[in-house]
Length: 472
Image (cartoon, rainbow, N blue to C red):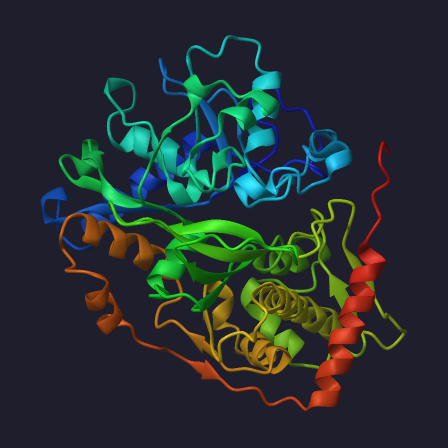
């Protein structure tokens, strides 16, 4: 999908801080995808048992219930325009002010202050408005929109808004009042696997039957149903989740406590999550902004043209650093340059930055749990195709890395949940029995080299901090 900057009224901010999507375009792309998929398999909606939704989570949409049109571009999860609002909300109590209720720090990541920014820029009343993350926007339209669309979200997406009470799985009235969110615009919070309503149009009569944030869907698709099971998805950003069972685990080391899933009437399960803002998107930056590659697929070849990064460290804090640092004042740095540094060194350092950030997430998880992580990290996402990155990830973690048999595991997780909701799958045991491993990478780096690389990375991170001066 195309990223656009300030195309609708109310957003005239510069691209340094803003990242927006055209919600109408997303909806049209989804409808096109449905039509093309059905055409390519020579079927129509009658062949479908159910449809599941997996989506960007914190990305925020506000639209008119009367017209079905968004009142502004969707503000994307990476957007940092709410940094000052976050600082005001945190006040003297700090960014963990609401963590005991939401599992989240106050940051530009969550939806709540993105929603407040859209409402503040709107010159009309709220009586006609509906809010949702991308899942709510799609489900409302796919089930009828202004002609009876269902306004819902699931517990995984709601848990990322900073408006849901993590223990009660309900909107928190005190948080709504504090941030200034009218309850009338909120979707109903439902489970992750149940029939929300029948589809319309190309999906006429098909049950819309699951809704999971993309990383929760990946955890589900990896069949990580038990406490201690761990996965990491490598996409635009990078997201490591560990299943922690039926009770939320509070983090004291910079991680997010989130809902893993809730299947029908079963108890909700929870996870610890570490989120990296820039991973795969850095490869696009090398192509589009720096021009050292012509296509994203070229980055591995370029990185392999040198034996190592040559002491170059690339910290891609383009929108600050997320977990475990939560520093919105950080900005990207390339450090360790000499006259001998080359395009290959920079490409290799860019790939290594993802692995090092995942290493930091793993260390934070181990510290929160007071125990070593499980022996294998399950991985998925588009960057898993990069063999150099995956080998380096195993080397830096000093543990095996095992890929899912398909890269786009989030779609599989949404399908698993939708199938459970309509009885297509008998239960979790049937899904476990279908689980298959793909490629596996074993650690092969000596301890001294590994530790030196980690120490060099952390020196680079220190240099990225404090770059943004408040009020500048």
